[in-house]
Length: 317
Ligand code: SAM
Ligand code: SF4
Image 1 (cartoon, protein in one colour):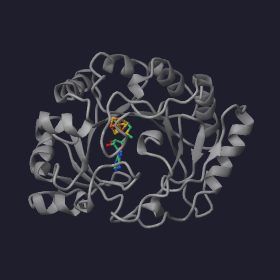
Image 2 (image 1 turned 90 degrees about the vertical axis):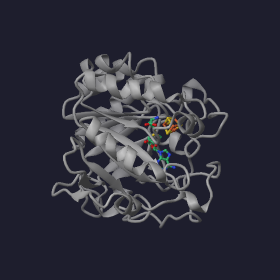
Image 3 (image 1 turned 180 degrees about the vertical axis):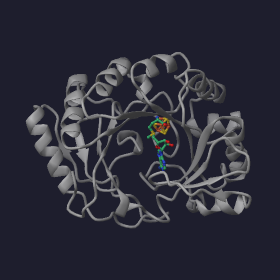
């Protein structure tokens, strides 16, 4: 379906939970989220109804995200049922990777086509610091298990943070030589008050080009990422300039939160609830959300925060 500005909306990002086993400093408060009543959250059946409603409007790509989707006990069943919805051609999942090792093969069997794994640093001490509760070897094991399970076009996502991991740009990009995987650098988005970074934390994605002059631009594009490649590498290096150069004109997505709110725009607090609705009503509300997509969100910067009204863990990225 096309929105008011002629953009074809083909992509649903569904957050299956706002809970997480990690507490990344730019995403979540230290004490986690206050756990909502079970009744306020979408049930598995409602999530599948929402995917059916989306597919009936022409949405064919689905991303399952969170919080951390792999803390959800019924994640395999959600994946399997979502992948079986007529019209859904691609099911992707975004994870921090730390719980992935025992699940990678099952996820593939359940119909997940592609994985994105978040990895901000290759230094164990820094990983423990940024995630507050995580251990780097578990995340690396997750990446390896995804490759062993046969996931192709794996994406490793690093949020660029000045004074934290900007010195690791070459090492992170080198992963594209070690693994058949793409590495994508994402600009830090100013989401909430609790992220503990000062003004220097925001680093434009162009810093990657300065750190790696040997990067060669790729002819193909990948949605929101500008693509480059290190000579001889197995995967590409992508730059996602979510702050310095937004991609609203090419926006093709809507988001659904774990508590059943459709978000026409990531950086707006406009939300449409579909909790408790049947298929036809969900479809109508989804249509409304698509027609409600703004042309563009307000500019973001270190001092101009996102208007999302939620932390990223409660949206899904
Ligand atoms: N837990 C999973 C993970 O970490 O991959 C999925 C959910 S997480 C909210 C999705 C993505 O959003 C991650 O790649 C994370 O690094 C990114 N993210 C969270 N907060 C962000 C922020 N303030 N700016 C940019 N990216 C952010
Ligand atoms: Fe959890 Fe992902 Fe947010 Fe980190 S970025 S706290 S892993 S939801």
